[in-house]
Image: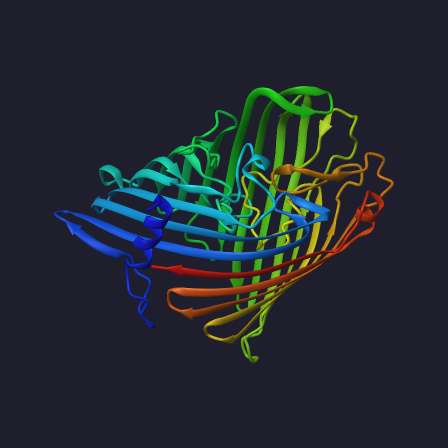
Length: 439
């Protein structure tokens, strides 16, 4: 039996799927230590038209089945000390893409590997200090700035990192250093890469009526391969900003703002990004509608020859479908995203999502970027305008049982003037069915 099949059999046989039973971990007492086991199995079928996982490709269609199995094991030696292990088996069937198409980081496949393995200590020596050492996922807030990107089959961000936690009555701060882990199906276990190196400070104020966070991220790549307008060189970027999120009566609100300074190759780095959300909950109406408007902006490079890099890079955010459309054709770089969201709940176990996007370039002379700052199309003259297109996203999520979630979604993208002026333009379509079982 293969490692993946063994893990799948262990998960499926680990606990009964009883309606009404809460998805709590299995607990095993080992003397004074406690072992907790949990896991998840996820299958997703996707039908992509006019794009693939790498971005918009108007002449390409792709269809595939993704499977992901995760097993979590937490061994707690005492209330303050534990070791956590997460194994993940990710596979793909049916895509025309192969492993050779992803030489650096494979978003589809990574047979049974170590996704996380760390030691965690909290309240050390009776203080508010904590420590987490090892391979780990790190996310904050709505995950737009800091997120593991778990919608992808292998996930976007995992870190080999050292994290120090400080808790007081007024604040909760994380200070950490790390290097990103690459998903490589031809290597076991996966390894982190020497570049970039990241140092982060993330602080949350406590005791306020809303969530208010501030952060700073230093990112360095000293390999000398970062391409700027004036030539190749090192990357040294400083990202600083805040997130605020809260509710007042039936009003929801959120605001994220980030500035970036430093060096991008031989260029000066001057970029910024913001996202603002305002919503209202109609709780007195049937299906309890929630309506939200979201405006997201990521700066672009206004002049490709002035020695200033103005393209915002999204910091360490995920590229999940929650942000820039279900087709995942866009990223938080040189982007205007005007979005309207509607959430309906016709039953306690059923949520319906409707999202409408209008996408545009923030700078006509900069590129249209996909995830990981991949360049899709560019017109340095700016003559093609800024209109990227519109997208309509529909999704239904049914919690069929406490441990079983079923999801269906579809998305329609209509090409805008910039797309039609810069090459072959075809409207994109996306269809999806997903089942997730957790225990």
